[in-house]
Amino acid sequence: MNKLVKGAIATGVGVILLVGGGGTLATWNQTQSASMGSVVSGDLNLEVNTATDKGHWTNSSGSTINVATYKVVPGDTLTYTQDLLVTLTGDQMRARLSLTVGGTNNGFNLNNVDIYPTTLMKGGRDVNGAVLLPADSGIVTASTKMTFKTSTGLRNSTNANGTLDVGYKLVQDAPTTANSL
Image (tube, rainbow, N blue to C red):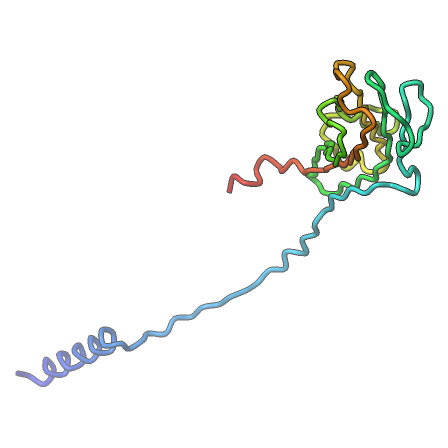
């Protein structure tokens, strides 16, 4: 074989060994990062606003009562009113405010009480059942009405006592695209 052919074969075998035998051929590369800015989160908060209203009870005639000493009778209606401080921030923030009621009793049957949906007033506007937006942040006055049923028979719940716990829950309505990814 001629020297030129032998040299070409040797060179080819050498290249094959370098490429196929774990050798590397270097390539250029470059990385770069971009400053995308900071992500800032919003806020959802609900507080009982004792600065403006510590919460108070009224009877059906509108008189303020001391619920610890007031004696209810069937057909009586009591209303609990409390100022709440609502904080909603976020470009797509939407939330709903609702009532939670619980309590303990000492012979008083809570089934003898009708509890009506809370009235929520913000600046003279009824926001009950509405979706609250950041513009609704601030003081919301919540009033919850409880009527003691006239259908309470026999001597059910007489000379008994119970503690009604009125609470409020603020829940965000997630943006519709939040879980679609």
